[in-house]
Image 1: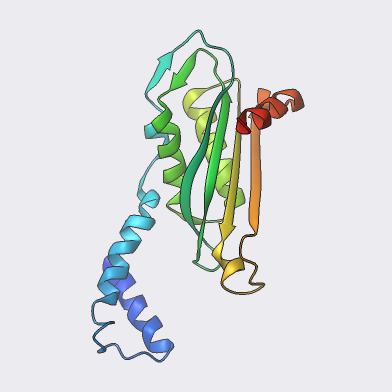
Image 2: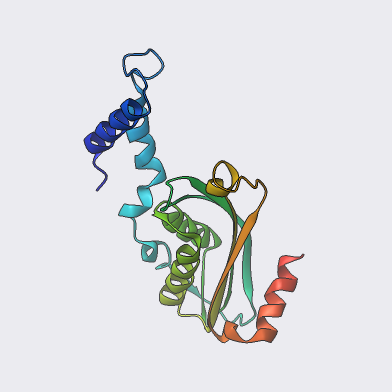
Length: 184
């Protein structure tokens, strides 16, 4: 559970630490605004991705399913700075499919936690495998990290791509099919 009061205290300390005046008009309500924002951007801490993947439908369809270009925003656990981009999820059904919005909701659950992109990619793949029990899954995330854009190396536009494959999608031929489908 997100502790709003601790967040407010932390924001006050941060502002004092950088030499700000907490009584300045523009900052008076900032601790409260940041605490409310944290509830929103870190709300995935309190969610179970399996809940979104529990409603499945029977199907005779046995070809690849790809949901691509799912926009996400997350927070790097190393610097508490945003990273954002697109998620692509492909899976090979084994008699069950899920509503497409559920894949996007699964991405959101993991994106709304402080973490690293590599971990998030695997978490999404594992959740889809558990929830749908498909023959295989492939998750690709591509993101820009503000810790590389705003600080440190300062290289805007640099994108990090991570891939997680499970089950039948470890097969190179199927992976190539997913990459071709992403180009459509």
